[in-house]
Image (cartoon, rainbow, N blue to C red):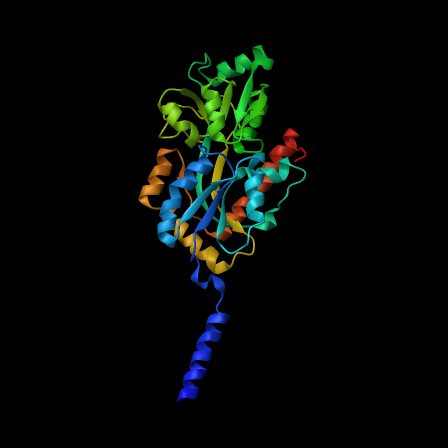
Length: 322
């Protein structure tokens, strides 16, 4: 009998040793990297879901801003992280789609990442300071044509969708303008509030509070239809700028090699959080739409976005050294 107990104990120990380390994931806090400064949509959406995701997973979510270099710093940090599910990225259209075409060399590649799920997608909005005499897209075009050297546009960073949206607007609207990049939408919006440049095509959530408070004037949205939250603001097409539909997106990404079981658990928890009435309602009030697609669907979507933006960057001749 004693020998049998020894065999049983040995079997339990062997099974524990053989069990994968990720079986109990998560058993410690998770770090969520934000590749931008506080105040932008990447930061806002990450912080909105962090606490609820922590509740679902039973562990703290530590939000860490790693701003700079068009999201490259944050994305590179994730690419170098151990693929154990304890380091994640709130990826977005910039570092995870546009950058591959915009920069000839990058310290990471698409194969370094394992997409988990889309969190939120949002249109962009063309805004000017409320003190500006520009009250429509036509006014902005007229001003730019009168004196192109006096027109500039800000963005949350080179390679982010506000930057490429500004470049697209220049092409489609037939205007010139100097690009002024910042380390995130928060600093860029603050600069526009300080009248440091002419206009910005921002992700809607970071400009929405200032549009509603009357500090910024919205001239057009990049969605294909008007938004219920801004019913008096025309689409770019209605404002006379054709082929100017842009949707920015933000979603959870893990390092490549993260165990499928961890990805699946993280996906299920995030999907439930973003589709909950509370969070989806908050996203809607910001002009956004909740995500929650599967890892395979999100991966295919990112592949399509990389191809789409490569065509845009190549056509505009925007490729540059990193």
